[in-house]
Image 1 (cartoon, one colour):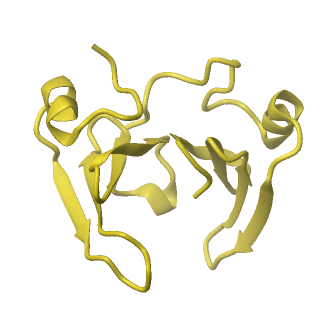
Image 2 (cartoon, rainbow, N blue to C red; image 1 turned 180 degrees about the vertical axis):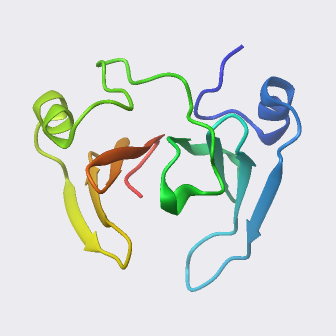
Length: 138
């Protein structure tokens, strides 16, 4: 079995093992309660949201400064050929016009996100650092 959206927490534990870290957030200001399962040694994080607690978003990490909690790169890319060596131009050429395109200049790097709703790409200083897939825009 592989990691896919919609799996329960126990199904994911059967595939990936016990999470190396768990973050739980209570319901606040209209947002439902949520939980993140962290697997930094695999470069993956799973987001679950109440009430179903099924996987709603999966984050795949490439080792980058702001992702220091995820030092290992997830070893695969997208079905359309985007991988950790892809550029921002490659992403936009492949996925076309994002729903959201945002840039944030930080102290150490500039972060750029291309959000296509069900898939999202985050770059730090022109390096692809995170790919996330989900059932909705985040």
